[in-house]
Length: 258
Ligand code: DAK
Image 1 (cartoon, rainbow, N blue to C red):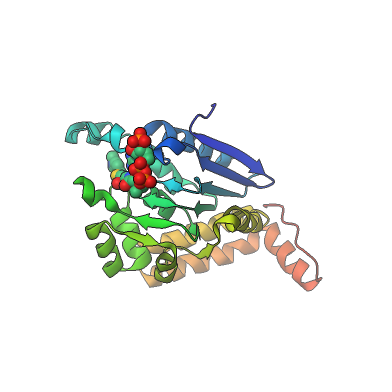
Image 2: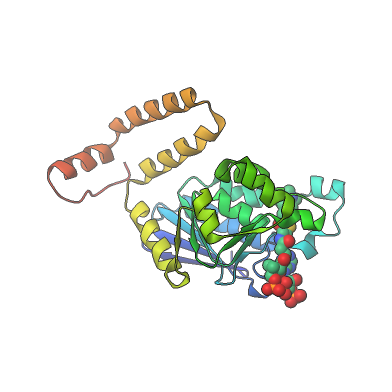
C-alpha cells in the first residue's frame, strides 16, 4: 500500500511511523488511520522489526480526530460505520513494543492514540488534552479510561471536564509521559530507546508488554500469578540461556528470538 498521509521508515530493527498531514495538524481522518493500521499489520509480520515509534511533527503529534470529517455524523452512522474503531484499535492490538514520540499538540484522539502506545516520550513543547467537551462531545477512544489510569481521577476529571491542555512538565509529574527531552533531542532519544528494545529478545519484550497490559484488567493477585507463570515459561527459551550465559561470561548477549 502506498501511503499518502504517513511516512514509514525503517532503521535496523526500529520502524518509525510519522503522521504527515501538516496542514491539518495531523488531524486523524479515516484515510490516515487506515494507513497506520496497514503499516502496523506489515510491521507485526516483519520479524526484523522489534520496536515501532509513532510520531508527528514538531508542531503537532495529532490535534485530534478530524472534526470536519466527523461533524455530519448522526448516532446510527457513527455507530454502524464507526470510521475509527478498527483502525485506532490496531494500535491497541499491536503486539510488539510501540513508543509515542510526542511534540506539540496531542489532543483528543491524538492524546488517546499516544496513550494506546506503550509509553510516551515527550518534547518540552508537548501539550496533552482531551478538549472534546468544547465540541459538545466527550473522549471516545479510551480518553476517560486511560487518562484516569495514567494520571488519577482528579487530573483526568480536570482535563476532560475543562478541556484544558496539560504541558509536558505537568504530564511527566503526573505519570502520563515517561520522560521529557528537548524538542531537538526527541527523535534521537526515542530511537535510542527503541533500538535498545529492538535488540532484546523479541518474544520476551512482547510477553513483558502483554504482562504489564494484562495487569490493567486483573486484580493484583491475578496479575502477580500471571506474571509468575510467564516468567517461569521463559526458561524454555534459548534467549534465557543466552542472556544469562552472556552475563556470566561478561559479554553482550546475542538473542535469536527463540
Ligand atoms: N480536525 C480537523 N482540522 C483540524 C483539527 C481537527 N481536530 N485541528 C486543527 N485542524 C486544522 C484547522 O481547521 C486549520 O485548518 P484550516 O482552517 O487552515 O484549513 C489547521 O488545522 C490549523 O489549525 P489552527 O489554525 O486552528 O491552528 P492554531 O495553531 O491556531 O491552533 C489548535 C491549534 C490545536 C489549538 C487548534 O487547531 C485546535 O483547537 N484544534 C482542535 C483540537 C480538538 O478539539 N481536538 C479534539 C478533536 S475531537 C470516535 C472516538 C473519538 C473521536 C472521534 C470519534 N468514535 C468512537 C467514532 C475523537 C474526537 C476528537 O479527537
